[in-house]
Image 1 (spheres, one colour):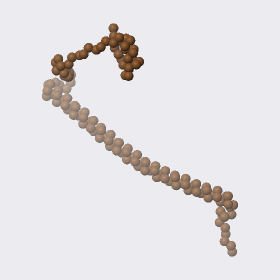
Image 2: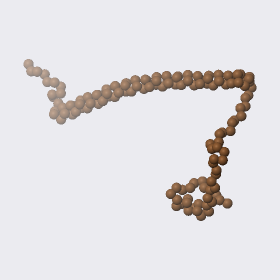
Image 3: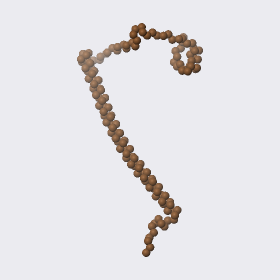
Image 4: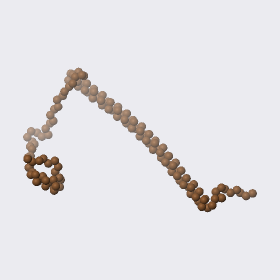
Length: 139
């Protein structure tokens, strides 16, 4: 009794090469798909972790904002009741203090600006290294 032939042995050489190429391509693309599925799983896990961290950070931020608002409300209540003697429904108007002068009296004097004629302004506008924008017009 003879040994039965395998089904692919009955194919011609070109058909066997085409079949072998087809199987090799299926193997390569299958391995790529498996790699992409694995990468997708890792990316999904990293995304879920980042999403959880973001939710925790937002919750912490809400708590800090709430504490800050509570401190402001408590400070305002203390100022109203203890310092000003005002009730909670009264409006308090605090005058704004004038800003301090940057120089002692008489230490700073304004220097007069050189008056430029219109043709000098045009010349500087087009030919100076730094164009003078917003130049005041001279009378």
